[in-house]
Length: 234
Ligand code: SAH
Image (cartoon, rainbow, N blue to C red; front, side):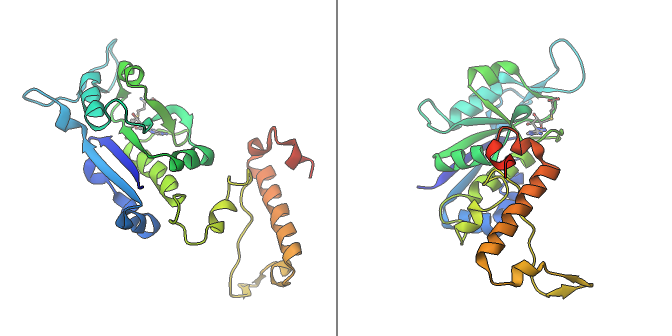
């Protein structure tokens, strides 16, 4: 069964974008994942096919209309569709690797990409849209956010990454940031690879990597350790 993503957007030509290449590109080719962009404008009516209007109460920008968006959502995701409906939004709950794994285990997603000032609040409530943010900064539209979410989800689908282990050891998967990496040449611009990594002692290498992970996380992202007394005690 493939993971099916339907993306509601005003810019369907932005998909699959970078996901047409490399790891995700091959997953799409094999049919492990499907990305179906749908133009919100195709569901607008009237001579001008307006999708947006001025904000009630005044202020800058435009707001996506609830009627047009709801018609589009209902057309691609009728009642009974088991897929969660996401709205990319800086106000949403920040995306985590745990949520990415959860989504990858499901049948797919319906993603709404906002534009302009955002979307009418009533459609968020009436169509039960889960607001998801990809970070504390503001993009000009939800499309790059949707591509980012789909990138993260597709790479953890079964069979997408060659070496299954290279998924579970990574940053956030263990609750920590990943240790540094090195490769040949053994010496470069006077810098050597840490000796332990060339020692052949697997236990020592594992311990070193774990210690580096912990140190990096303490220095850069102490928030990841908060509440994880087990790790802090080490
Ligand atoms: N006025 C809004 C920002 C609108 S940005 C506010 O202040 O909250 C336009 C669209 O870009 C949004 O509707 C959303 O779909 C998308 N977007 C912007 N930043 C995002 C982020 N950090 N994460 C996810 N989507 C984002």
